[in-house]
Image (cartoon, rainbow, N blue to C red):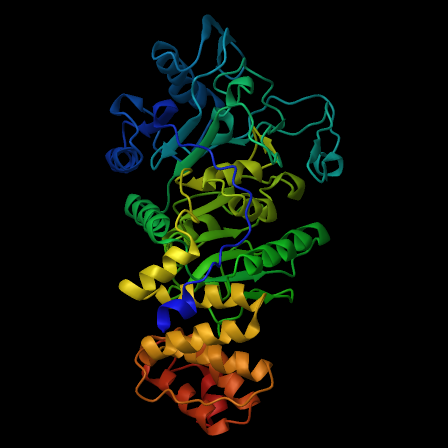
Length: 520
């Protein structure tokens, strides 16, 4: 009886414009002076079938921040030579250099290079030079985003500080003025573009606080690609600008529509330290410079392959300082895909979180979705993660099959997603999915979902969790939420009982709020 009750068509509606991965036209760039980065590169290449000859190693500086002269001498100029020799780009190199040290390059054909992936050890950002345009018009005042149309106002003093990856996107083009940004042709484009008619090369980066952090996060994405992204969604609103809050509101609607149970923090604060945070498949929020709140706790681990983004002007000023910058912190906690800004980007030119998730809904790879969501190139953003990662390659029906045959610690979240998708059509059947699953594999997470749904529907519910395994390892934020729910529904004794289990955990023993609630 279990199988017919749960194996139903539960696919979210998506527009499938998924592009084929082309390993042959992908270059991986590594620093010859950082052996661990070369190991990261080779792991990616083995997984994606990228030919060994497509690995370019150059002797680069080991600092994250470099000058324009270093970028030109140690990265751009030698990389162009390598790509020309291998016929990934077509053109001529002249001996003359510009003020930033870039050798003149005249392209004579469209690039045959579709992706350029940097790895751990490749410098991250280019510091500003003294070369400036003459006018001092404010960049922030002149940047406007209007739906899918990006207007760039010329002749303004943008500055030439930049992300290395964002500059490398122009490797196949003639040297352009480095001040300011260039429109990204993929931004907001719902139909597939012909890469050969663009000239810009899409870039991404596999990086993090350490090579092992980068590898672990990438391997989590590969696991999610095989088993499907599973978990819940957490969206932090309440940032300082209305436009940004609208983006994150749309994110919450998108993840909810995909069937992921979605929690929102709508105040000006981040999720507090007692908030629920189990199995974050999505964490998207803003606007805190230093990681804090619930998702800055070491015990709050992200689900394998999690799409995680904290929007802030300086979220990736370094990828080594996980205690200071959000991007490296999220990678350390397991983010399969994230992004960050190396210098001030201005809000209108940051990656759009709503378009990132929308791109994934359209079955783009994570890298395609990131470029779909990024307004400009030659600017401050860096895209972090395997760009070929497909979080929805293993559909929810297949996840349910997996739950039947080989349940694991995340299998229950496939059930929650299936129930939520069904609730939009048939609330009674949504409850049946949860109950049937509970009979097969008792779970406190399922017990709470059943009780909560029955309470919302105005029906009586039982709360019998004695003997159900997992309470001792349950997310402590979820324990708090369950206790609050039980108290609200008139079960104060059960609420106190479940809260007392937190006293056995070292991280909770000195919690003043816990002691206050328990009267200790």
